[in-house]
Length: 384
Image 1 (tube, one colour):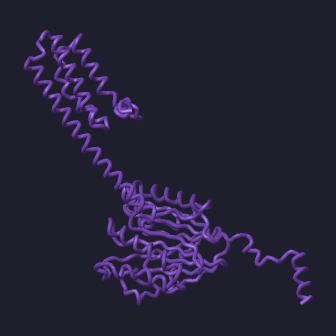
Image 2 (cartoon, one colour; image 1 turned 45 degrees about the horizontal axis):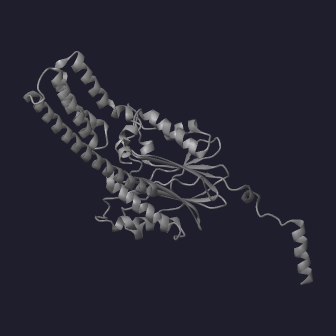
């Protein structure tokens, strides 16, 4: 069992690379014996090479031990005594390099484990903040696409959520001012507040006021940290309400008609600018038909610039990515935005596509009882 554990690095997928120091060591031995007697100084680098390709501290020490043996073999081949000063000095150098290589492996692996733990924590946070949304929420089909500006991040300062509540399907798309960990923390607070208040507040203006509370309670909550947001509530009959707090207007996609901005009746500042009790955004009411779609997005989409500095023309380009399933549309739209920019986005970009797709039973209206059941009910009524 112990031998198997020691040989574990050689059985890993990168076994070929891990065997490289041994292959080079064997080559040095052959060259030293048959052709190049002055190649012995190269033995000093063998433990360092082993440290590069192994995750185990014992491996550089083992390769170093073999290098010392090869050193004395080649010394004897040259007709020198094993105790010669040159051979002893070289053996000592190999031992020092082997010890440093083993120490380097230990430090690197500790850092790797710490990084792995940090990544696991980050992925746990990401699963909470940017969790996948179901494809069908009540009478609404939904899809989300999120692109973080940071190359190695899955989340940033943009936020989204879709929930089925007793008031209807409620959704939010928002954009936190700023970037970095502070923006992520604010986004987390907003999503948490939305997931609670969406089930409690009967109207969207009251919901917006509730969402302003964590911003008001935050340290320095004097408008330094604000969030643009659009809130939506879709009922089972297609009746939909939207409130907008300083956010880009959603787009209504209806059949072959051009995308229509759903501008709010009145402009209000982003959440966090006003005290919560003064947050009362006006409500825009829309009656959706089956198949109607609403696209919600953040400014990272419409402010994406091409090399010439031109903004992405969302309304003009959107018909090019239609039709298709909501997820497919957003994927094509994201590809089109990246093609327009020609590189990574400079800002986070979130897109949510909601389609009113009630079940066929809801469209048909209340279902009549079967004839036998109606006859039984009539008999009971006459008997009564």
